Length: 249
Image 1 (cartoon, rainbow, N blue to C red):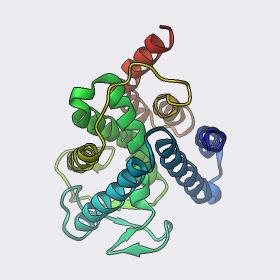
Image 2: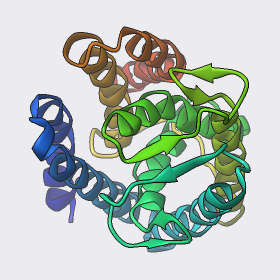
Image 3: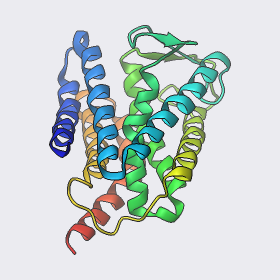
């Protein structure tokens, strides 16, 4: 199983820079490949390190909690704001493609592991903050690809056209997911870990740095790149420092 997870991890890492270089007509394939490799990696890594119960609980929570709130927001504007999905992402229920909740799961495991590394006593808050910081990159990227569209009337304050209430909605959703997740699987502190156990942390750090570089250099979106480097870096930099401290013991 570990070899399989290592392969998924490698594909997940390679997919991100390759995606940045794809022509527009191949971006959908690249998006689907990233979601597939990332979610599969997260699921099986969690299965291998914390057991099948933890892996299934996190997957189901992301699918049903995030999926339900996405449907609610598409229909009512709460909690993320007023937006609509395109047809590229496939079969949808109440306006939300079934692929979308998986996008929550693919980073939730990474955020949870970072939280356990940094502050297990405040793991719910830290994990929620780490997950929201990732969306500083994700939402502009998906809007750029035309996968969903925000209405101009949505939100008074915006970030590159995305209402700030979206991030409040993300934080609320993440709090619910992680509170329920850790009700069943306690957020134990990380004092020692192998490189295999550290893969979600490395993935988080890679996403932080790589997404910033791609937005600034290739996509000509310096605001997104800088904002993401700052917001996600608030978690990625301490996580990298703490990881090195543990590994050097």
